[in-house]
Length: 295
Length: 206
Image (cartoon, rainbow over all chains, first blue to last red; front, side, top):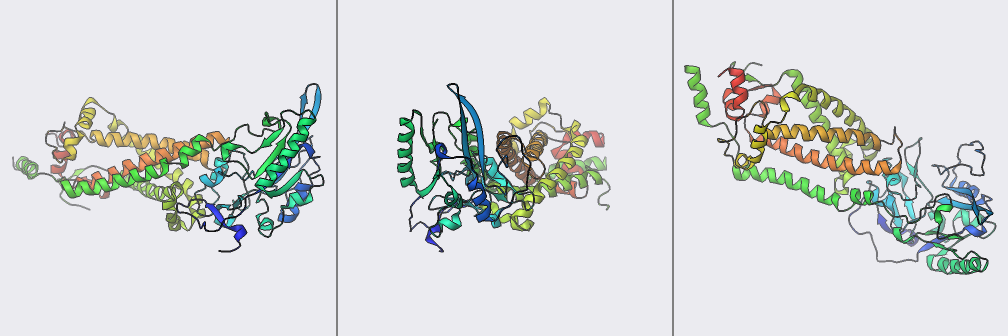
């Protein structure tokens, strides 16, 4: 086994357990939406560290640029203007992979080892094993993975697994000038979030709270939201995300059951032959035909 | 190729070619499709040159199958209309499976089981074709909920189609003298008389 920090807890399309003797601390990134100024330093740092360059687009009339995640933009700032009690609120959310504890992408992926979940909670795509089917997109409750038109591989935020592996924080966190991005153990991040939430509540945001959705087992990217009761306000952050029941049917118990059923049909046929023997034309019928010939 | 000149013609060369194009496509589709269906079958992708090639080829083979099936559907759908006699036959399928087919209702060119197979395959292929296009990310990009529904329907109809095809293949092996109809087109008169008495009468006039 290589770096302990890259120990794998879950592996796509793998039905046997991964090595689990070593255990490690779960990490998390905390995004405090209330202190984000929308400077996009995180976006720039992400491009820098990962050496990805999106095509230069054009202004769409709002700050969002690029307007959506792409195979070359693993994080984007989403700006939404809403009116709350007669006041304009500019809600800015850094979007990207949430690194779910129960990742829909990993569950849906048919290629062994193309998606892994490290023991520290990071969900990572190993593009060398990716077959480009797009099932990860179908499985993701947050619409995060993107398939490149150039190489047909799926890409998304790695939570800088390469940096985290050597005890560095993600590039975006490193670049954030206001401390809106924090990185550490999930435990510490939750504690820190509680301080921020208490502060927000004091300032009149009585619905402030932590976004760590239990429907996907919690996430390793969490948000502090001023309106935690209405996450949709933040450019459609899902209220109660979970792996779609359709994906659960598609990739759940029915899969081995259907495989078993097919095996039984095949075996049943074989044993039917062994038990009952072939269905041959009877001598009687043959004789009848011969008799007709003679007539 | 001439065998007994009194053998009965069951399939023309073009019908046979059509059938085997579907058969080959089916085998390739089942092998590559199962590979994406359950990890136990993933090694099957190496038959296609790896996972990426299997992913690339699967949908194109599917289109070939869909078109070939459409042709065979147009050829045979009239012969496969279900009648009361066919349902009767299906209700008594247990007798048939026990190898005791003497009292089964007399069958035309196709028996109830074959007709049922024909329609199940038809419906499955239609569903597989439509949902397959929806899942085909190289060409289409649909809303995720639709894709999820398509994924469930695609896998379910594929499982049903594979199960019925196993039975189709087994029935051909089990009923001796059947396979040759699809290889070189003819069956013996005794075979026809025993298994498709009504068809035999129509052809021979007895």
